[in-house]
Length: 329
Ligand code: UT7
Image (cartoon, rainbow, N blue to C red):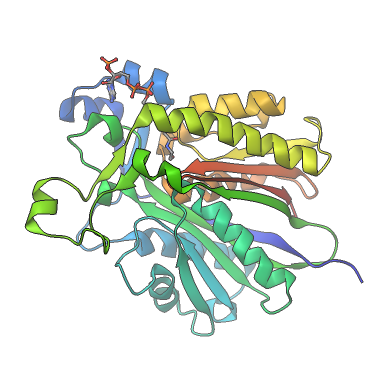
């Protein structure tokens, strides 16, 4: 019998309307367009405005688009896995909130936290439910409202992050398309370089934590950069070697969009020309769990059945990984 794989059969994406460009940031903190562009590749990012709107409000339009394209109703979804670092609430899971909002009454769901690698961890997890035969339609969501945890007085972080996300549908395939292989890694020693200090059980919210601005992203950029640039290139090369993929065999690199310099270094190591690299960091910045599905969403019409994609990410934790996907449509 042929192996069952989890094929991506539809993609949806969403970014909010409000554009925060480098010029606006120049009015807010001591920075400039030249610094941001040359160090990161970012020109603009999107921000979700509006009272009481959370990550689920970014996910819902993306999922509705996906369901529309695939021509199915939300009640056909078996499982929703939502990768996010900015859940609507500490609990219940944003996946549950999404299920209620889209009417996925026959699904179960849970959130998955792996920072910027979240979408790849969720995609790999979702693929196992398909491969085992227990589930037929799995929604994998990657979404973040990073503006909820960014200090817009801290120039080291506020220039980088944005809001947005997307979703893919996984369905069984017996013709060799879909998620073929994945390599995922975590290293808890990375915590000190990239974390949010308060708001969890170790340091619950208090007047003191708010006063000390401990509910924002804390990042030692240079230290994270050093690890990211090596690990993302290493794991991308590893997945190629494991699957006997040459540079010619790879049609697309789908990289997490944290810094153009990290993406360039990864592509160089893989031997890929810039024309094979999905890059939209200049428009959306780093949307954490949202970057990879947003790339797939933007490039969907350019993809062809049978093309080999390498999805690659690095993030807080540290977490990192690469997934080899054979495009199914
Ligand atoms: O997605 C999750 C994982 N995260 C990442 O992968 C991020 C990895 N890190 C990075 O992308 C880069 O480290 C940053 C973009 C965050 C920073 O770039 P960098 O080249 O590593 O800069 P740096 O932090 O070493 O700072 C260099 C200088 C410093 O000034 P001095 O000490 O040289 O005078 C900073 O104070 O740039 C200064 N600086 C800025 N200047 C203008 C830092 N932020 C800014 C800013 N505008 N926004």
